[in-house]
Image 1 (cartoon, rainbow, N blue to C red):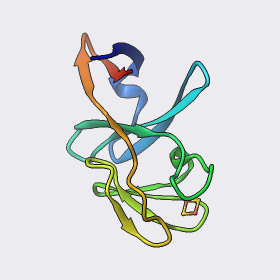
Image 2: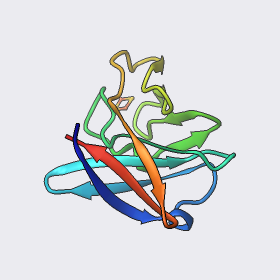
Image 3: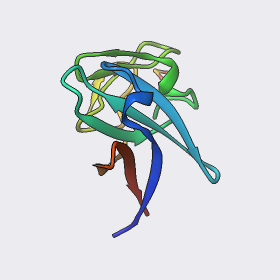
Length: 104
Ligand code: FES
């Protein structure tokens, strides 16, 4: 059980896109899929300290901007080398048109 933290308005993230969200000394990536489902993962790639929010969203994949590794952002699973360690994912909820993530 963690705290629900407000990230942004629903419309602050375009469909099939991702934003960076910093909270304290942590950084997250918050995604909106083509069918307007919302997801959240750690902000840094597990291969290097590069912000995934600078990468490319394709379907349910995020491609890291540095070495083009891919993760499924809905599960965190590593999907294309050189990434091999899964991303941590976070629960997301929508309330009053705002996006919240649950962090420990
Ligand atoms: Fe992300 Fe290398 S830093 S694939």
